[in-house]
Length: 317
Image 1 (cartoon, rainbow, N blue to C red):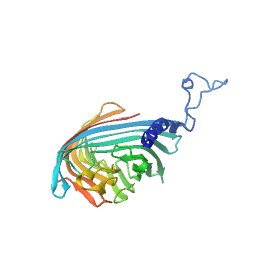
Image 2: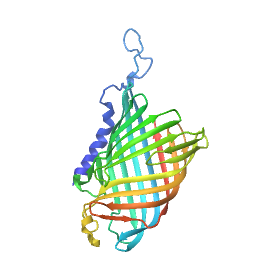
Image 3: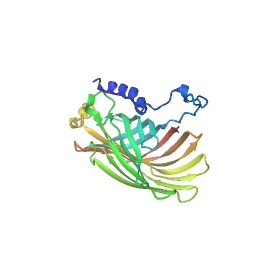
Image 4: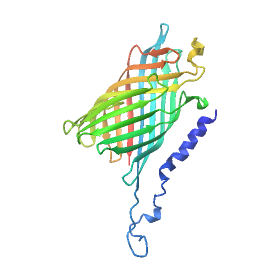
């Protein structure tokens, strides 16, 4: 039962240290350009180890969507979603760009009546990956996200999973890039999902960013403000508590894997407040949501959609 908090505490302590393994970060007292490296007065050579940092966080609310609970029973389901990740990306000289970090995701559902599905889905995971160049034209990313994917209850290592992805971006020109990828999760009904996308800046102000999970059509109103319309395809697998569905006559759902899928369509604006901070506000409609207990042969989906609103922040430095 104590496996989850011990794992989370460990990764919070170790993740910031991973990029420092090379031992190449200079001490603060050696950073001054006026300090000579030796008695000859020569200027110390700059460190070849560079690091960048990325923080993303968003929160959203989806209104009541009429949902089929099975056996002719229906009710309304609302949703709050919170996501965030912090990534450290060290790079030595011109070598690969490594990615280490932490990520968190939480869905909280509100039901108008008792339903045979979890009211909470949650994940806490480590991010371990690498970006590198291949054949001078491809940028490749390999990333794994080991962690706990459950319903927020202490279930030990039963809800431990390691989804991962492999993707490549072919740079045809400064205006056109093609993207290929594989998303792998062995708890999903389709363990391997391939994807193809394109990013095309077809004028100075317009960009088609047709890359999952957030394809968009973007218009640059100014250097700081971008307007966009598009979608958000969200997919994940979680192991639920053993008590899910028991009180409503579906004990086979207890302890099972649920694949949660939703699609959102909408639009918003992205404001680059400074060189490192970007804020986004978005609104639209959720036409599809599904709780798929595919191994237990049960699934629940919405009969009607619902509006949503979202705010997010991104910082990179």
